[in-house]
Length: 166
Image (tube, rainbow, N blue to C red; front, side):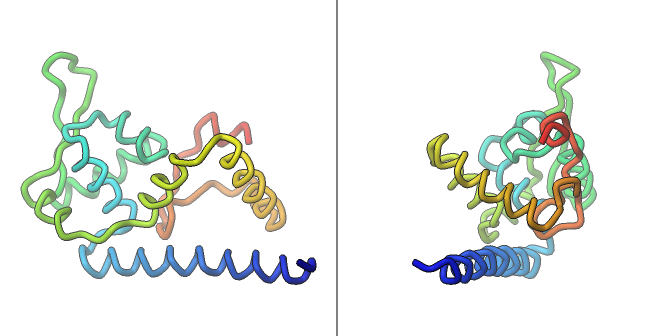
C-alpha cells in the first residue's frame, strides 16, 4: 500500500470515529435528555449499584472529581442518589432512583461504554500500539497540553497525576 493510501485510510478512520461519537451522542441526548457522560454514568451505576464514587470513577476511567460533577447533575434530575456507607462513613455510595432505573432500561448504548469495553478486551501489546498511534496524532495536532474533555461533552476530566506525567 502506498503512503498516500495509508494516509487516506487514517483520515477516513478518524472521520469514522468522530462520526460514530457524534451520532451516538445525539441519539443518547435525543432519547434520554442526558449527555453521553451522564448516560454512561447511569449505565455503569446500574451494572453494580450501589457503587462507591471512587469505584464508579475507576470503571469510567475518570478522575473522582469529574464523576462528582456528573453525579451532581444526575441527582438534580432525580436520577441518582448518594448516601453514606453505614460501615464506613467516609465512603459515599451511589445508586439509581426509580426514575433512573426506568430510564436506563430503554436507553441506547453510549460510545464511551463501547470504547472501554472494547479496549479492556485487548492485550497490552495492542493497547500500547493504539496508544502510540493516538499519541502521535495528538502530537501532530500540537494538543499534548490540552486537558481532555469527556467525549462529546464540554466537561473536563480533571487532571490527575497520570495526565500530568504524559
